Image (cartoon, rainbow, N blue to C red; front, top):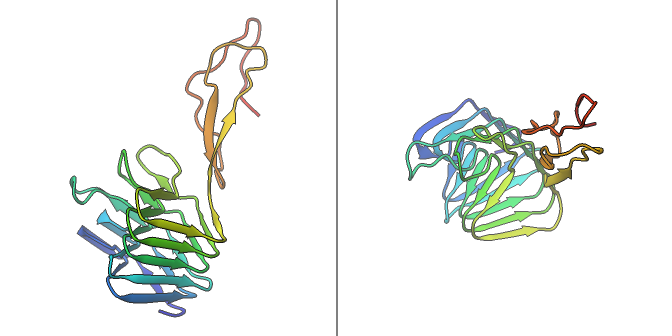
Length: 196
């Protein structure tokens, strides 16, 4: 697939909202976007027999996975990989999973091999919990020799002489707003205006 777009595809009780790969698939300067699955792999499901290569200015954007039942459990908003996935360049962003406890909005890696040489995986999340999660690895091998995967960063909140309150929040690259502070600190004679 070269200089092409796969978009607005839907799969129900299945795998691979955009691409269901069990052979060899190469994506160059192409886009998979706005695809969804009630199952696993909103953009791509790469089987154990599959080799998927993403190169050039390719993008997987705004894809989603939702659970159907315990087997088809809404993992991998962008990709579910149990084969060999080669990310030579490109971007995986804006994808979501609706699984309340497991899975990644971006890449779900339960077995197989994910090779990342360049590119970015960022801004993916769990749409139920709001948690940012671009890579969820429960098995297999991750070989990362370059590129960027948005990390979770814990920020410690300074109450500036106040007491109580939430002590830290987790943020990721690309977040546009501060996460909700569950419990505000208190300090006699002052009004809390927020953290800056």
